[in-house]
Length: 295
Image: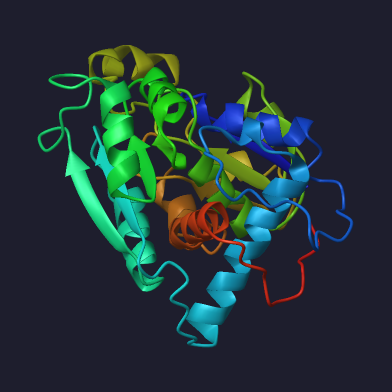
């Protein structure tokens, strides 16, 4: 499978490229007993092997099947708590983390920049040490990736990157759970060349939070990159479309966005299952009960 990324934000491409270079598209041998990541942090997927990433996806799909489809009650995180630190606004990441952690029996605590002294009245070092004694895991959405690195350095509990200016690992896990195929990447400045022969067309937000002052320039620079049915006309006949949201009309038109080719809303839902899979993997020795999928 090939995926074309038409994006002004290179965060997603960096994560996808890292996975592609690690051979995620290669069929895995049995992951029974391998790929465990308990106790580790997740700042970028570059920190994990392809086997570990495959296991994260396996656990995520397993939880989705058992909880959503089989209606099983799995209090895997009972008695545990998560600190959710958000310097930026969030819909999908906050809801996915908060509802997912609660669904697994845990207690989510939401903290904005108004609620916490991170890097202002209290150093990231001290905050990391305090939170390590108060909760079991931290998910942070920050403006600067260095904040995550400082938290991870001093914390004795796992730290999850909920989005920084460099990486968005939980989004990439959701993308792969949605596609469930190996992916070959193409990055080019020609939209039609990029779309040629692709199975999946992916675009992203052109103006992310914190880039509002660059909006005028970005809209000018990326004029012509909107994904339309014409863009898809040179892709594979069964091509699909992904967007991490929120979406603006200049990035993709309504005809594509609301078409049967669009996997945008299943992709958004899968954010919840992959965050749940990641949290369970970092905090427990959970073993999937469903057969390992073919990657």
